[in-house]
Image 1 (spheres, helix red, strand yellow):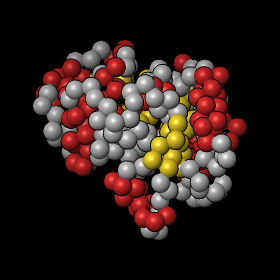
Image 2: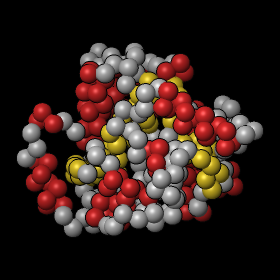
Image 3: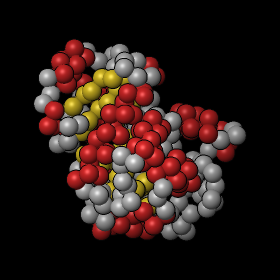
Image 4: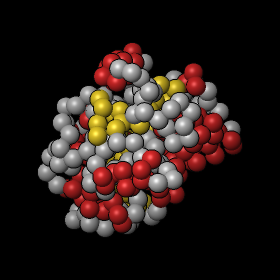
Length: 260
């Protein structure tokens, strides 16, 4: 696991966008896993700026979804399919034919989950998965005490997560109680995991993920098991890391050819 401490969210977005651009340069048809929420927006803005400037060609790039609310009607502005279309696909000039996601409106949710896992495998697997982290250490919607071997499945959101996400809805009552999420086992199959965390509110979760024990209580700690996991954090999110000086030194001494 590599930890990279950056000055702010914008710098983190630029760094990760550069890694994605390098991936696309060597594999134009790469499958990029995207996350929703406010944290990854600097990444998508930086990618869109490269596309607009003509320095990045994403015509063959494919995009896949990390999670989705259950029960929101098709076209609901806060369904994650709609959010990804608005925040990722449209700015990059990609159509829905470039997109893979689970069906949160299915009458058979377990079947929809299994179908999505199969679709990811059929697509060749995720090349780079962008992740955020919840204040309780969840990734995707794998809440504390999720199985570290879990596959894509339905999950019940904790009250804390629903409260965290209520800012995107008119009221807490409108936030769904259930979601489809890639399981931790599914997430760990991506070739490169990149977690971006910003703000003091994420500092405790980041420290537990990076320096704490591997534990289902902190789902993001499963990234310790991955051969290529990168944690990008701003100064505020890095505030509780005991080994921050070491992380700064190792990144400063990293050979340029290694990339992110």
